[in-house]
Length: 347
Image 1 (cartoon, one colour):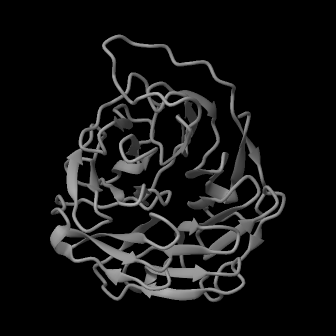
Image 2 (cartoon, one colour; image 1 turned 90 degrees about the horizontal axis):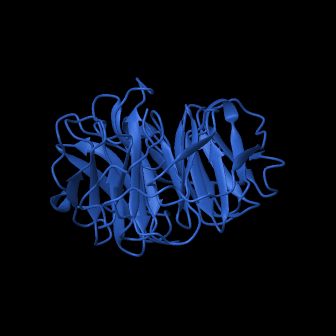
């Protein structure tokens, strides 16, 4: 189990913590519009393109695409991949996408399509039995990174400069040492994220401290920062998302104890160098995040929450189970257990 979600909207408000508390600004109530997928697979991978087009992926080799606002979802997975678990998918548009399957050894694979899923090319297959790839993220349509749990004491990375058609191992010298037991959660495709042309972040758990790793040079060198979130075998930061290279939100908790008390959200206003808990937070474990303007949406098995002010104040708006959320071009989509997929309404 490994991953997380959020979404944002409204005027830009700095992620600061003033000396006096401020009430959360009023905003319209959002709601999920269900879009039946015709599957009961767990859909942890999600990539929004716009209000009409989105891709989801998940268990039993499932990859689906809609181009009609979710009225219909078409199965478009590579042939012969029914045993794989596609935990992350990154779509550039309705035709071009990269999908990551997770697992030990050669179960960790990356596929790319250039024709809406009619055909796929296997562009990476892990050959190290000690590696386990969790997430993939792109800076733009060509440059991207894929992240594995630590091997020989450090998180392992692959990089691409041709849109995921080929991948090259990133030298380990620039990566900070991992903590004992530290790893990433492939729970929502959001344990690795980017903002701008050079900044990337990795969300971690499993160790003594829940951390966020940051690179300011496209993944060559990294530094680590502790967060106030819980950490342990089933706890940590599940998702990290940045509105821009400075302002970010990290979310998570303990998936084995989803209602356990403790901070589940942290905010940063300095590229992830420091993290602070907000005045308010969703109740319980959350696995996914997305920004829409300055608003944030968080999702998890226990429900969905909205923050209209960049993560400082939250209110619940849905109690159904979801694993991931993503927003693009003003449209937000979410996906999760039992084939659930939805669009955000009310904004």
